[in-house]
Amino acid sequence: MLPDIENMLRLQEADKEIRRLQDEVAELPKRVAAIEQKLAGTKAQLEKAQAAIKADEATRRKYDTSINDLRGKISKYRDQSLDVKTNEQYKALLHEIQFAEKEIAATEDKILELMVNADARDKEIKAAQAELKAETAEIEKEKEQARQRTAEDEKLLAEWRAKRDQMRANINEDLLRQYERVSKFRGSGISEVRDHKCMACQVMLRPQTYNEVRSGNHAVVCDSCQRILYFNPADELVDQKPSTTRPKRHRPKIDAPQAWYYRSEFGETGEVYLCLTNAGAQASRRVYEIHTGRLIGDILIREGDYRQAFPEDITGAIRLNGEWREHELDAWGTELPMVVLDSLQADLDAARYEMTARASAKPEASAATVSPEQAAS
Ligand SMILES: [Zn+2]
Image 1 (tube, protein in one colour):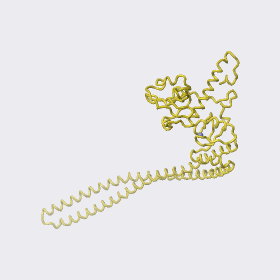
Image 2: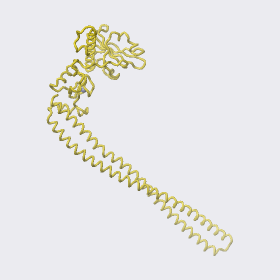
Image 3: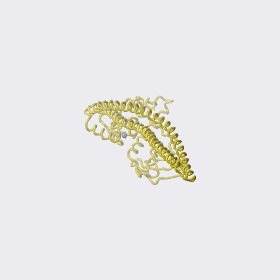
Image 4: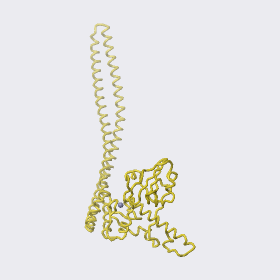
């Protein structure tokens, strides 16, 4: 592995750690804010209960005043009753006195009610105060923890940033620029190649690109995602097997809703790729010329799944690996993108290789003329 690649892998680890720490530092104040909001809720409850008590006290004072007024009136009526001349006047005063006495009794009932309420409100306030005390203690603890955590994180961040600067100094400038540019947009700037694929974007590499990455002589960039590619022999056990020169080919899934086929002949066109897709109760067929990727003819739609709908196309064709979404197919329009063509071509090569290997391996049971490579495939 190139020293630059090794340095960049370490740099990527450092960048990841820095990002994690930054996220954590940003997250802590949000947690504290959430607890503070809860605390504010309890405070508001307490204030409401206290305000209610004050209101009750004011009402109580109003009642007391009105009782005093009524008593004043009664004594005034009594004084007047001493001076009345007629029976009617006396009765009228007596009536007034009775009325005022009734009112006093009613007001005294209301005061009693307030006193009962006051007990309940007292309890409410005590509970809210206790809750507030517990929450305040809790938030102080949380805040302290957040403060400590932030301080630790900041310290680690400073250390990692220093390390990162050192790492950057050891990487070729052009590569570093590429790494940082892609990292900024994709979150990582370097990607492992395994099984002929860029592990970050999952796109198959062209055979030549793959070989360049494997050789490790110079840095190579993924055509599809622009990440710098590297190859770790320890991860590519399949390729390491001395018995085979090719990675094992994935088997296409029998029941996949989309199937790609290769036909050596298709009408006047010659070699084509067929893309057959099931959608609901219908199947569609697209035909592409294999060298240019040009769409040939219209997209054909028939009833049933593609095995029932296009049996004549499948017979004698080579099934390939490949699965793309319907909207991608639509987006490509009348031409397959280069990455798709390359991926299909690589799989076709692998399929052909497999077929030859299998064909030559067959007589192995009767004759010992087969090399170990072929037998193992
Ligand atoms: Zn890629």
